[in-house]
Image (tube, rainbow, N blue to C red):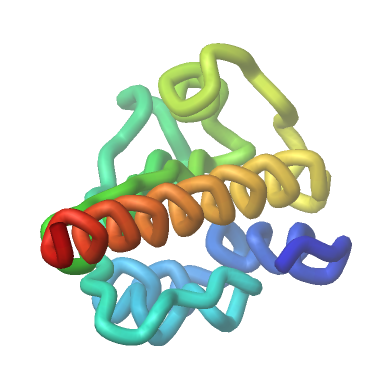
Length: 131
């Protein structure tokens, strides 16, 4: 799931307003374009917020919520231009440069963890249904 091209693609959210709009309006179709594959049958919602009044990006903090069956998971995509959004998502400031792939790598790692958690919840539900 993670390679440097995918990590760099996360910057597209913050440099391409049309893509950011598409991500907010149709996240299930937009996320695979940046290397985050959504499992079949999962519902994807995006919640956007502004980290601070002076933030350049709107929204500057995107929360992606994944739901499948009775389970859910989430991850954040903070703007590299918003120290407040990064602080809210990760408890620290990773970068201030849009083209720094370190933020993209962190987003992709968090997305992978959320997807693993969602899959694990599905396995538990399936086991409970059999028991």
